[in-house]
Length: 392
Figure 1: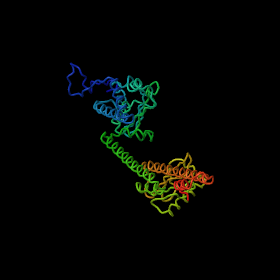
Figure 2 (figure 1 turned 60 degrees about the horizontal axis):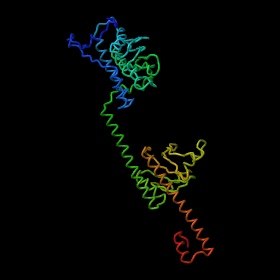
Figure 3 (figure 1 turned 90 degrees about the horizontal axis):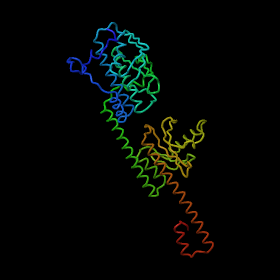
Figure 4 (figure 1 turned 120 degrees about the horizontal axis):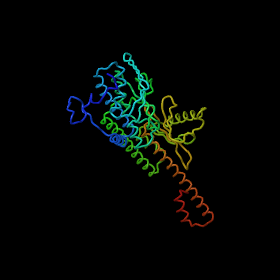
């Protein structure tokens, strides 16, 4: 039999009052616009990545099923099976015309090179109607069909890759089909789309990620509340460091711009000084000349037995200190970055309050002394004002 002689009636029951051959598979007629709308709904609902996987797998199963039907017929030679695939494409209405550029297969070795031009793909046409031109090929159902059909015929997994697409502005769609080995790694990123993932598994994974995010936000909120309490109690930077250590169980270092210890928690000051000297040495090497290069949160992996997560502490747009977490047997987590930034903000507020308090005290003491020397105050007024500025 020749591929040109193929008709859908050989495999499928065409709905007709004169057709009562119920042994054949039933064929449904679905308008291209309806399939285009289904594709649109999928894109809007589950996104482009999952839609691509869904359509490729749908096409794969369609192609595999057609290949099973085709191989049941008597063929002149196996090469005719390669031509029969594109013929089935056109019979289904997926494409108006297929121009085969090259169709070669070694059925004994399991090798294949199939190249064709698809003219007037319904999938490209529907995409253009709804979205205009695309930056990448869009004929996923057609590619999946070709992959499934040829894989079944060859007995080895074949992947069809669309290298040109009408939806990208090309005149026609152009596809190349080869076995995974013959692609030599080019289509490795495509293989994930052919893996069938249960929607339940995806929902479970989404739920797991949402739970992690919820727990992280809850933890970060607790730290925020504790840091706010420390500031309201007017505790010093040791109070901030201890609050961070209590919630993270990570050693905490707060250092000034010269990498001198301001506060530590979870380790001794002696250990803290050792870590500060190591960071100072790192910053003074030929590539990292200045610690002031650290202007945002950064993960440092330059040490032999630990890692450091460090973030700058700003005061009036200048970096005046640093807050760090130390990791000996662990690795930094995303929630740690959120917490350390809150810690740095608390340090900034503390330092700002301290600077404001000192400047205010000095100003008030200067004014008081000036008033005393000018003999403008009574003894009772002097005593009262001295009390408020802690002046003997």
